[in-house]
Image (cartoon, rainbow, N blue to C red; front, side, top):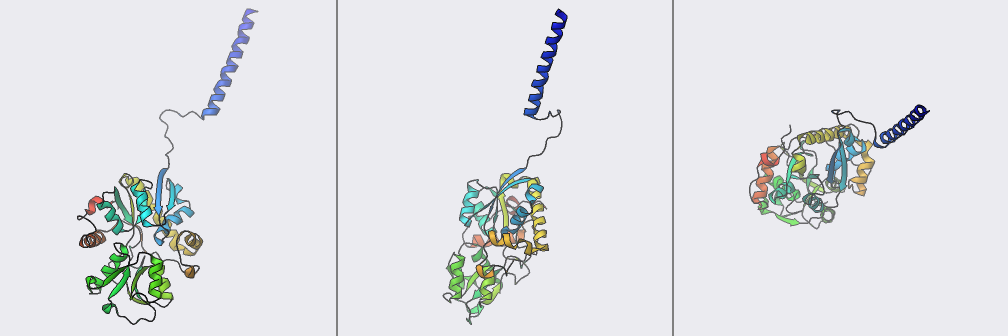
Length: 325
């Protein structure tokens, strides 16, 4: 009798232990053998964008699910102004941003911990055009210009300066009127309240469609003048694997856009500012690829910044530009 009792107690204890083990396994998940490979965690990437043409590959990558394909847990944050984007980068609220070389070198000169990860828009001279325009009906010649409306200390002024130089005109002999707002600069040009103005696309295309006269474009020489770049905090830019994944992903997104721009019209018109008159009629061409930011343009930009007194010293290309190619 005693032996039977002990057997019963043993069976009950075994059942209890089995039940507890089952509950633990269900609650904690499957056991992983020691040394088994762990599943890689997605790379968190906070990306700062503006509602401009340059953001298109990031938008297409989002639409097509490429971030997860390339191992990113990405957040796209659109800013209303370049100043807000730069403040977020300085405050470490974003890791990566679309920028231009002018602002990028000025940020680095001020001690902001960034590097230029790649060229974005501008590998082909006709990508991301800037236009020097005269008002409709104006008969002014580019060589007789006395004033041009620009946005000072920006890529607009840089583009104006280099275009004039390549036309054999001394920019110091032309008054550059500071009108930072692109819509206001466009309006003043079309109303004839300025002798000429420099506008980027899509505003340049709209002005031409409305009768403005083309005096010059920044693709008039084989060497590109204006480019945009991808910049990142040094902690992100220093990870070669992250950089290579990002560049590969964005180039795939660009190939998808080039193959069928019309497919993305709706989302582009939703996230990129396109004037009402051009909606349904205009999409930017993008001929180039994302590549290493070229030293030639770096030197052109840094020399102009030094000439204008916008940076304190000549920057080092090798220290600021990521060489991943």
